Length: 156
Image (tube, rainbow, N blue to C red; front, side, top):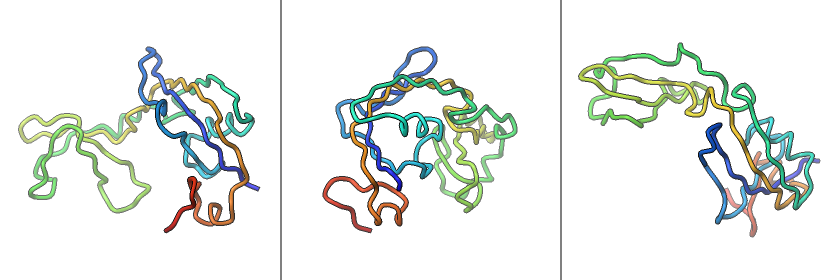
């Protein structure tokens, strides 16, 4: 049977900079083994009990991968659909395949647009401080839907 795990986390870079945190909010809920969180983090939490805390360090390979230079490229501004506001931070896929990488615009210089299809945290060693707040058996609906449902149920 599959578990639903609730947890609080603080994510830090190798330099100690806080990149993300659930502190002050609701714990994150996920369906264990569903691919909703990084597999190495999922494995660590599957072995923890409610109330346990742990610091977990993930190498780039265990986290968002190493940087792939072939996903960094320059394209012409004219390759974007007319009317698109092309500026740093714009995210897009080059086709409709949901498995294709999400690219983001890094910089625009005249007609040259510098894009990167690597995850923003690719190449980074990540440090998670985690606390398991909930662990329970997933419901049939959660397993069928492929994700955890919060308190009070969930409707599609």
